Length: 257
Image (cartoon, rainbow, N blue to C red; front, side, top):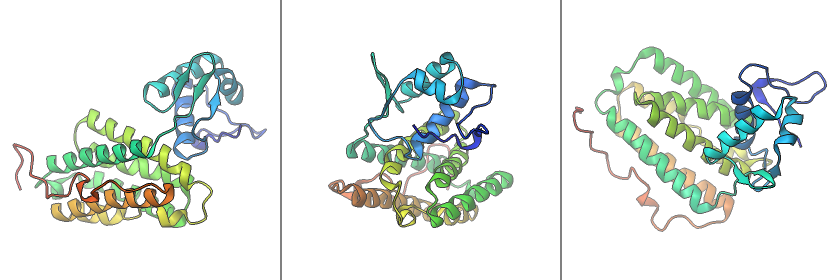
């Protein structure tokens, strides 16, 4: 049962380990990383006992962590059997992209006319995240990309100034990768299916180009659907142009152009 723990480290014996502080959060984070990277196949079953033994911790924090992930839709509770990795469908993925589109569109409507006034330090950090994500995407390093990409969008989501919006966008990113990574893992052409225009998006944000940001995000959403449609062998939505964001968004009340 080969789980990797990413930044949480490993024992000298080669088995995964989590630190003794905040075990519940660390186990949940380690499992989330496994799911996002596609290392846990859809439908895979496991028990609290298995995970506790694997990580070398007691059952209580493991059970709490798995219940937390199940509450977030990242695992499925199977009474009498333990937990399983959810089987997201193509329709689920289309819904995820649509929801992501609406959230990001709303964030930039909220920022209408104020892009060039964003905190320079926050933009510098976003650029570093973008650079890391682009490097990983172009190299086809899936395990690195999922983390870099998630951190990039988390920092961008923080520009909304609303923690609930940012948290929901992050949840959608995790759901997106749980589906996509399962199809990308093990492919030699991963780079061909990974969006790598993060730095260009930051450039547009820094120059206050609202129309350019809108156009790039529209293209990103459409590209996501086209790429995964090709990998899954599933048809695109009836009208791809109906992906939210087709029309130049109106600013929210109280904002200026």
